[in-house]
Image (cartoon, rainbow, N blue to C red; front, side, top):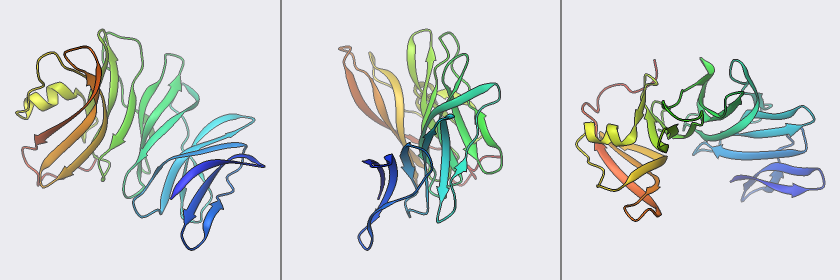
Length: 222
């Protein structure tokens, strides 16, 4: 188990195991947070705060933390949201002069922006990804506000409502899918979950399934 807690050094990142109890991970700085961890506990991602500001970081095993960097023409800060099962893909948002940009970080390509929908202020977030890091979900901002989006293995941005329709799943009339927060793929079936606005205008959770056209296709990013 990973998390963060108050201590005499300030807010610290910790890991807990039944054999050791709670252990301070000794990240530098005075305000550290963990937001994502791999299923086997071998890697985690979060943020590290010090006098220079906020850095987004990755931790693997007993190694030192690794700075994820920032977007080109960006500025320090943002938030990580998810790490893939193998620890090699991290999603979140980073700050820029225009606003928050969804990003993906990989060992090969480092941090890169995922873009946003047209028509609205810049505000996109990458909230989660598939186990292999190929598919990413979150939200973008258009003229009507937040809309749930999905990025495919080529990092093309698609509205979740359009993606579902293309795979034979219709969003009920009156619903607006505003954010996608979870994704799972098993046996060629993709399951998406998130929050949105129902026909009464209330915020409500949703879940949807889409059958992928060819589940044998390698979905790893190129």
